[in-house]
Amino acid sequence: MLKITSFNSMGVSIRLVLAFVSQKVIAELLGPSGVAQLGNIRNILPMIESFSTLGVFNGIVKYVSEHREEEKELQKLFSTAFVYILCASLFAFFVLFFGAEILNDYIFPNQEFSFVFKIVAISVPFIALVRIFNGVVNGLSAYKSFVTINLISYVCSILLLIVMVLYKNINGALIAIAISPIVQFTLVAYFYIKVIKDYVKFKDLSFSIPYKNELFAFTIMSLVSTFLGNFVEMYLRGELTNKIGIHDAGNWTGMTNISKQYIMFISAILTLYVLPKFSTIKNSIAFRKEVLNIYKTVLPLFALGMLLIFFCREWVILIAKSDEFLGMKPLFKWQLLGDFIKIASVIIAHQFFAKKMVIQFVVTELFSLIIFYFLASFFIESLGAEGVVLAHFIRFVLYFLLVVVMLKKHLFGNHAIKG
Image 1 (cartoon, rainbow, N blue to C red):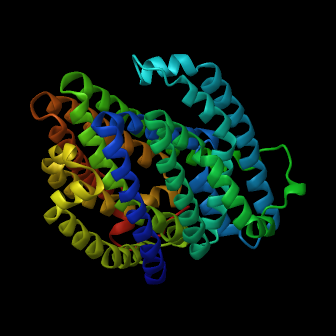
Image 2: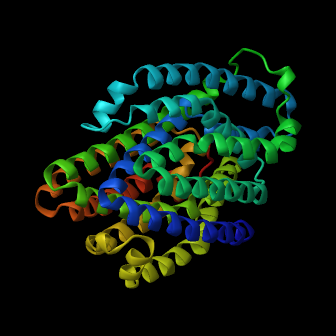
């Protein structure tokens, strides 16, 4: 755990520096309105990423970690995954390419960005393959390879984004985000190919779905979380734009962008360490011990980092954005508090993925999103963007309590754990 955390910290630190540079360029050239528009396309890509693989990423991680020495089981798993990719990618391509104008009118009203959806449509199979390849490497817990290659991919994507923003302004930024999956696929395929070939016997893959039942749970969990989560974000950005103004929408999007940069740190730990580890745990004592170990390693680091960000928030805004974004200052308190509770929550909530606890996951996720949707919509009227981050904090306090209740037999007492 400590090795992964320290190695991952180096990678995330470099990514944070690059993210600050790219966000600075975007903020200076596009302002809050441009940041808000980019926020919508950034919400769309995870939805496509999830749908193009039918949400089986966490399933790949789980079953590769469990069957890494069983070639026949892995072939069944990968055959199912590639059939899913083929069918979902074709469907997504047709919807995005031929429905580009309709999607543009809904997401970017009064603006012409339909070309972006057509570019994304072409990127869909690359998005899916990168996701599957990353799932294999995560399942093998090859954290050094994962962090290194993803860092290289991120550097290339950021450079592409900066160049395109300087060259074509908002259109360039949207194009760069849309084609970055192709760049990532090229790099991932080049560097991972030896590892992938050792475990994925492409010539032995069949057009069949023997793992459909095992992966179905992950499909439901991923689609609920990714689709609804990003849809709610897009809706609230639209509400802020319509009721308060695009400047406030840009400030909130800028705040979530900063938040997502440090959340990257825990995301890698969750997929590289937590999910594979939880998948192998068979009793509540071992689970409780592992959770405490993760908390003792991760939470103090985040607490210190978040305190530093909070007390230096004006500098963070001026360095990462511009003085146009100083309206973000009141947002930091509730966003940081909410993110800390979120991290504590998602660590233990990964037990839902590890043990395929579909009903518990869907209930907690829907509860979380519904609370956020209604509270944020209510607070926007009186508090603007600050109301959204206040809703974010309340949401994750309640979510954490519900997750603990759902996992009480895993967290307390001495019980066998199925799955």
